[in-house]
Image (cartoon, rainbow, N blue to C red; front, side, top):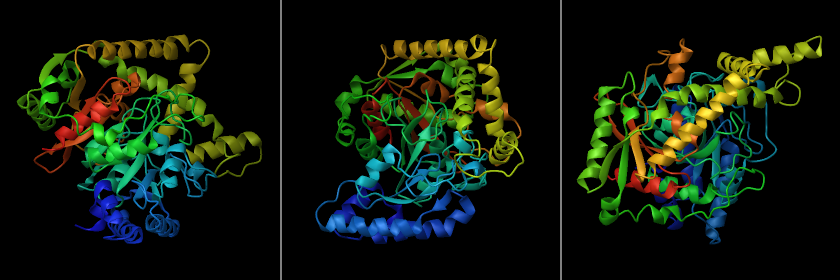
Length: 479
């Protein structure tokens, strides 16, 4: 096994036992990036020089006995998350030259441990997309089949982990942007509960839905990262002060006796989706059978307002988008278009610096928030959101977790849905409801289609039940 193919657990053990250095581990990842990024396009910016400096410092920390779990481990970050002195574009030309003066809180926590930042991952611009074809730096291709999409919006992060360009990645999930590409690329992706991890330093898309989480090779690695990045942040008033469990220990406690007590809900609506792929259905049903064979109690449940989740999501998100993106005008940040008047500077900078999907969402959101339409659209969508959350609350009185496919179909072809925005929006049908409700959801690899394309299974739990959700995912990953 090459060094860049290691998990966090394996890499940390190797560093601790002096089997190799962080410099060697980092070089292996950078070599893989140099070899494969031209084909996959997973990175917008590669911070090779600073990564080597950070690796040397990490080796010094380890030599002094100051090493911690993520010390010396090379990782990558979605480009919509700020990293101090490393270009952060959000995959938009309007921020092509932006160098943040600070780290996002989650990144700061990792770098304080001596984590090695390899660079910034390509993504749909500002998180707007489900296929990673909306980046202004070109689409990300699926490492399992270069003719297929990697999923979005965090496609570059998932592809980089799947192709062993990095040991793990930090990404962002508003309506499925971690889980969807994790499923398509065959890796593990966690959307934590809203408020579990700080959003400070994340380029805001929809502030009431945005979350930050890890994309890793194993559930055990996800647990390790969450122990570091989770927690209260005074810079983000939405974060919660609840104690952070020792996730890496909690996920190992689900033995046979505990599984026999586990109540697993199968939401009817998640299997009645139009266009559900037969192989995806079969692989998900096989995962459910595995738990049943271990003694888990399987119960069909209903989430009746699921069918309204995408409609509500695509009112709430563009509305908040249009407000958040107003700050990007070509004046304070990024690239500015030359023009004869201030208005033309604004208009030309935004027209040139935003891709079509971003413009579309700004227009939809501005309309939904305008006088005379706010009550009919945004306010009504917020009420529907409450009903969706109540559905989950009621179901979690009956079952412990829910299991479903992450996506109704395996990775689709490049350009297959690009010309149909509505079809692209509907791809979020199975990941959107958990996001709207603010609950944790984990995508784990469950198998592959006959064509060798990955299929992910999604596990959802009550708010702040990340330990339970990861425990179930960890059990599934044994197969």
